[in-house]
Each structure stands twice: as structure tokens, then as C-alpha cells.
Length: 474
Image 1 (cartoon, one colour):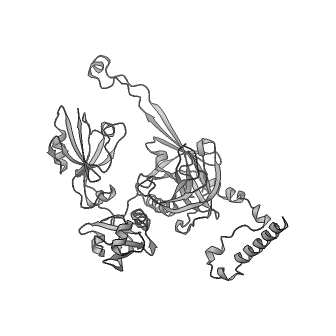
Image 2 (cartoon, one colour):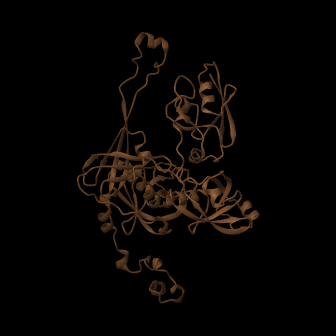
Image 3 (cartoon, one colour):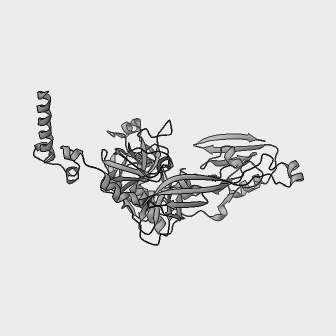
């Protein structure tokens, strides 16, 4: 026992010396590292997060979303019953409600939450930590980032969380998650940053997250992930779980992305637009890296460059590998998309590129996507299998938004509304309509002509991920 105590004391003395810079190996530590110290005394072990919670909890709110759903009778649409009963089959609307959390990002009453918390909501109420409730106005809803920006008028400045630079967050940093899990009331959990730049999660189009082991459960969506300085480093958005409860794998949208979306809403935008550069990318596999003479497989491999786009003007070629953006290393295409989006439209970024076995730096301007013409889009309605699908004639910007190669042509599905024939047959955004009943579809005129027919059987050809899917529907 004495040996163990003495050994512990020696280890304590050594660790204290290391942290104070007395030992040579840490003489070169950075200022950032010096502020991240392990507790080494009993007093430090007894430190509490309570002052931090008191400082920040007032800026985290509860979000209540309600949506009225019409109850549809199984007899609705049947000509026989409608003839005798006038189609009065539907019952009274049923109200669906969802519960989530939100963060006050500006003292004027601007609140950030997840888009999936308020999706399709007719009304959204905000409950502050002090018990007051307010009706909110939706300023921005964006499915690609899964973020939504709300606004309330409290008649006075509200406590807000400052947004940190999420690029400076490091694995192992202490964090707190604040939200309203399972509707039990405001709850605080603690943990660390488990991973940075986590991709391939499949939560949203912007696949770039902070991973944490702080307990996050249903109802925490839209809540705050904060650092020990009381700054917002992320918006809690999803968990990995087989049971529905927390198992210590949670994901948060980085604050730098949150900042970009909030600034868009402040500027009057109702959706967040990605910058357009006119190129598509894929992962650098170990085989590709070996073929290019790279020591490690990382970066974004250019697979297509659109004519006249910013990428072509900047000197990007098919086969090039984007290694970094403004000096920040790029691991994969998701990371590249995140860096370009947080840089913002109108900016010019410096790309370090491996091109023909040589590294070079090029400047690429981030442009605003050209708007799609209203004449080249439509919502399909009527008694047909595609009813409920919004389609458009592809342009380079709409192709990029749908994650299709910029040179892709044709008529593509932009959105599929729930509980419609198009949703029931499995139509998805990004599907390209290639043929209907033997008629090749290249323009909106072709589609309109094909949909005007009334065949007994509908035959569709869709392109999805480069494959052709054929369906026959009676």
C-alpha cells in the first residue's frame, strides 16, 4: 500500500510538473494546449458545472410544433359512395404534435432549431426557461442542413449563446448538452467531444458533424452543445441508437454551419443556398491514392467539371484531387462541401490541388446558383401515379442541389410530398424521369404530353444513381 501511495504521489508530482511546463517535452506546448489541463488536486476534482449551467440554460428553449392532419376515410374517392353521400367521409382533423429544443442565437429573439422538429408544422410555440410562451415566426427552413430559424418578439432582449468557432473544437474537450429529452423538462448532460468532422452518418445532405458522448435523447433535437466557456459549438440533431435511447453516440451540427444559416436568415433568405462551383467529386480510395502516388487516401477527386463554371475558370480538371480549402485539409467530398458552404456565396477560396502529380494552389469563386425558371418546373396533380411530385428541367445549379453531375440533362424530381401517389410508388428527389409509356422524356413539354394520356397501365423509366428503374402501375 505504501508503495502504491508513494508511486501515486510521484506520478502526481510529475503530472503537475508537466502541466506547468517544467519538463522539457512540453516546453513547446501551444497557448491552446496550456488552457486544457487535467484536474490534479482534490479541489479541482470537486469543481462544478453549476455556474456554467446558470449562465447558459436561459438561452435554451422548448419548441412545440403542431400540425393538423385530415382524417381520410377509406371510402373517399370511391365514385359509388361519393354519388350517394356527397363525399362526406373524412372525419375531423387530428392534431399531430412534436417536441424539440432550440437555442436563442441573438438577443432580438432569433432561435435555431432542427428543421425536422418543425417540419410541416402549422403553428410553432416557444417556451422560455422562465416559463413564458410565445408564438414564433418561421424565418428559414432548410432540409439540406436540417436547420430552421425562428423569431419571437419577447418585448425585451433575451439571453443568447455566443457562437464559437467550431473548427477550434478538439477531440476530448469537455461539453454540456442542454435540451428537453422526452419532454421531461430542461435537462443538462455532460461529456466530451468524441470525434470531429464525422461524415457518412446519413443524417442530412451536409454530412459533417461533431460527435459527443453527452447523453442526447428524443426531444434534445435542436438543443445546445456548449463548451466550458459557455459558447455554442453545435446544435444537437441526432443519435445512433438501436433502442431509441442514448448509448453515448450523438451528433451535433457545427456552430460554423449554424452561423452561416443564421446570417442567411438575418439577410432575408428563407432557405440556405450552397455555393455553386460547377464540379462533382468522389472519395479518394486507397487504390486511387496509390495510382496517383499519394501516401494517404484523402481529399476529393474531381469527376466532372461543368463548362463555364467557377471550377473550370479557376483551373480545376477532371482527375485532380482537392487536398485543402484555405489551408484546412479535406478528408472527403462531404468535408469539401462543408468548407465551401461555411465560406459562403461571394467568397473566393484557395484550393490546394494535386494535378498531374504536382501540387498547386488555385482560386475558385463561390457563385450563387442560377434560379430555376418557373416555366421549367411544375407540381404534378390529378389521378395518376406521379401525382404529388414536384419536377423541374435540370440546370447546373439544380443538378448540384440534387447531387447530380452538373452536365446531367432531363426532367428530375425535386420534391415528393408525403401521402401522395408519387410517395407511395417510392419516387425520390433526384430521380430523373427518362420515359413514360414508351415516350422519351427530355423536356417539360414531353412530360406534360405524356401525363395527359389516360392509359390502363402506366409504364415509367426512372434513372437513379446511374441505374434505370422500370415500373408498371395499373
